[in-house]
Length: 424
Image (cartoon, rainbow, N blue to C red; front, side):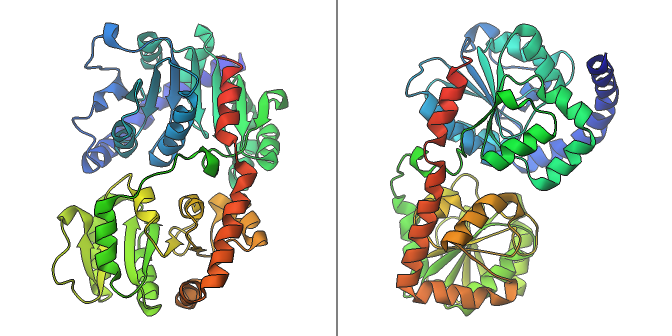
C-alpha cells in the first residue's frame, strides 16, 4: 500500500514538474547541441525500427559526462568477457556526445526515457535487457518498478553518498527504502558509503564494497598522446610551464589564471560547461588576458602577450591533462564540492585544489595523509604553484604518493563486472 501511494503521488506531481522544467531543459539541450542527435528518444520516439535494435544484452544508465566516462570504462572491461550488445543511456546532450564519440563496438548510445508511465516499458520492450546497471545514484521510480515487474535485475555501481545527502535521505527514509528495495545489488565505493546507504534503508545484504571505478587507475587503458594537442601546448609553453585549470566554475577562470600568471606559467582553462565560453572570455579579458578559444581553430601567430588558452569543448580533458605541468582543480575555490582530481593523478601530474573538495572528501583525505595533493586558499594559490613548478624533487614525491594512494581502488572495474555477472 505504501508503494502504491508513493507512486500515485509521484505520478500525480511529476507532470507538473515536467511542464515547468522541460522548456529550460530544451533550451539547455539546444545550447549544448542536443537537437538532431536523437533527443526525441527521451519522449519514447525512436528513429530506428524496433526490429533493428540490439536485444538481450546489458542496459547501462549514466546521467551526464562524468558518469558516461565511468560507464565507458566499465563497458570496456565488461566487453573483454561478454559479446552481448550494450545499451548506454544518458540524460544530457554532452553525455550522449561522449557516448557516441567513444564508438565502442556493439554499444548503442541512447537518450534515457523520461520517467513517466509508459515510456519506461516502451524502452525496455524495445531492448529487452537481461540486466540494468545504474552508474552512481540515478534511480527513477517508474523505471525501477517496470524492471521489477519484468524480472530484470537492477544494480547500482560506483555508488557513493555524501554526508549531506545521507542526512537529507534519512529524513525521508521510508521513501528511500521503498526506492532502493528495487535494487538487486549495490556496489559501494568504500565502507563509509556502505554504512551511509544502510542508514537510509538499503538492505545491507545487497551492498558490496567494490571500490571506485573512477579511481581505478589500473582499469584505464593507456592513451596515446594527441599530436595536434601536443603541438598546441608546445607553442603555448615556449620557455615556461603550462598549467591547467580543470572544470572551472563561474569566476574561477580569471582567479586561477591570474595565479598561474603570477607563478610564471601559461594558463590553460577547461570550463566545466563549454557553453559558458562567452562569459569566460569576458572575465579573462577584464583580467588582462587575451583568451584563445579551442573552437576558434589554430593558434594565432605570433601568440599575443598574456595569452590564455580556453578548451571550450567536451570530452577532451584526459588528452589535454597528460600534457600539463600541473593541474588546478575547479569548483573548489569559488564554488563548493570540487571536481575529480583522478585524471591528473593517474598520469603523475601534480594537483592543487582549493579549500572545498567536499564531493571527494574521502579520497582527498587519503591523498592529504599520504602527501599526494596540495590544498590552499585562493590567496595562496600562486605561491603553491611556484613551489610545485620549481621544487621538482618534492613534486615527484607528491605525484608518486598520489598514484600509490589510488591503488586502494585498483581492480574496482573488474570487481564491478563480477558483481553484475552474479545476476546477469
